[in-house]
Length: 392
Image (cartoon, rainbow, N blue to C red):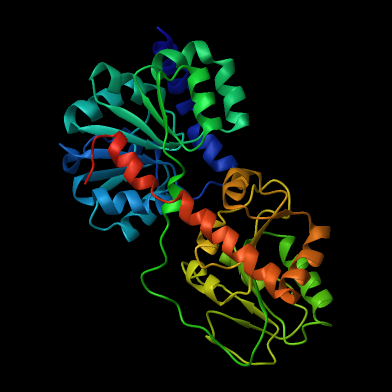
């Protein structure tokens, strides 16, 4: 009966989809009719891995690598689907059908996945309900439940508890595991955060820096953070006259809009940084992880301004460099804690970076601490495979 009312509400909301899309100027090519499509013949007998969008598509790479011959992907957004097809061309992928009971039931009955893996917390009630009815083993992998999500789910625990009882929750952390149990998941195990199994890029991007320079890299910056980066650069120049600041905006379209105070170059125009260049703007896609290796200090963007939540510091940590994150990086506070990455305010940033660049011992100790913490957290993929009965 609860699923029935959920489906009635969802069906009603579909009527407003074109209005919402127009009002929010939502881009993309996925229409509501696309979400009614249930054909996915390449799924039969395989493991279905469902993801949300672009960030999740990138994060599951270690798991996809291990299971690629046994795997098919569904993604919720068209941008996620495009990314999945680009980086996993050998793995069949499609948009997840709309979470209406008749559609989901038809999708699962027709395509017969052997197991369903849902990354982090993409909770679709009709999908979980149908999977339970059809006795398809279902797992939340690297499961997370934020404090905010927990409060929302808890308000509707009467609805979610029956859906969760047959789903295995493979948690990122003890906190996530405790929240999952409280919400009604019966089978809960801690496996860790899959993001920790990220590997260095297979192909490394080139960069040629003239002279012996100290380099600060700002990764995935948002509006307001470039100004902080410029101010930090100006204050440090008196002690480090050859300082180079590299800035990689999260959204590269913003690169040309940034008002840069001194001589600069764009990544799309050159890979050679002459000694007179103070700022290098990375306006290309997919190179940041590789370019981190050129930094002396890595500053994680989206974490020094509010309402973003920060970005993943792990890709920077694996290069054995000191990494710092801002106090607004709440979405990655657990990751920062596990990596022992310093969490700083804007006011603390100058003194901390200055000490790193002046004190070799302090620099070495922090680099070593972060890297060892990263190595300790690895191995999540194997723990997930063991938990789902797919040890390779």
